[in-house]
Amino acid sequence: MTETNRARVTVVVATRDRVRTLARTIPRHPRPVILVDNGSSDGTAGFVRKHFPDVQVVEAGSNLGAPGRNVGVRLAETPYVAFADDDSWWAPGALELAADVLDAHPRLAVLGARVLVGPQERLDAVSQAMRDSPLGVEDDLPGPSVLGFLACGAVVRREAFLEAGGFDDVIFFFGEEERLAVDLAARGWGLAYVDDVVAHHHPSPARDPRGRQALAARNAVLTAVLRRPWPVVARRSLEALLAGPAGREGLRTAVRRLPRALAARRGLPVAVERARRRLERTAD
Image (cartoon, rainbow, N blue to C red; front, side, top):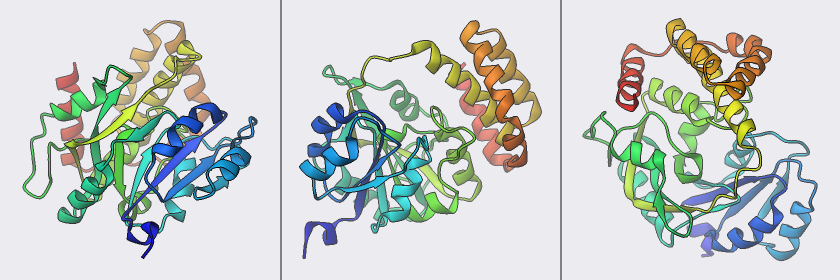
């Protein structure tokens, strides 16, 4: 039996124009690995095929954003999928442990890992928030319940991910996890943080910090339009408006995507909306 046949987890990496970074991280991924190239212009696909022939390369042909990961999940032949960015990787043994946890907890759709950032191995702020989640530990889940996660530190149940539609192109990229998390919870799936499963993330310096701030503002508003009550939409819009030039830019670009967000809008179950508000009160 080959390693691939024994595997329960496929690593899916979505990338664009980061071939030098991939050269360092791909060797760290346990196989099988599916690389989705979101329209790179730096020879990523050819480089990976030449130097890592055991990696399945999919050329999207254009920048699909976060939904590029959906392509990899659909192609995966394992019950679980671990996401990695081009600048992240999983600790040795982490995915075997994650698979054991998912096997033992059939309602668990997303396992949020402990993400350690940089050479200093600083605990990522999102991991900290998940570890300290006020939602408690449900009897059939392995750790604190959460309603969000960090994609490069998440292992998902393939069935649940596809059932909930994966990542969407309204959000496109940055903060794409929130909408998927609440949709999974709305369908009765569980999401939990597991401190013993570890991922490493060595992010490059932000190439456009103001652009990322604008994206964060835009996507916070759009996520609210997609799933949250109108007072939440109004609050997030006001926060963007008051957040300076980047926030106002984010709000302006959100307007262009509003028709698609409104077409896909639907409310959350009362219990999920209540849990989401509890998390937001804690963060404030």
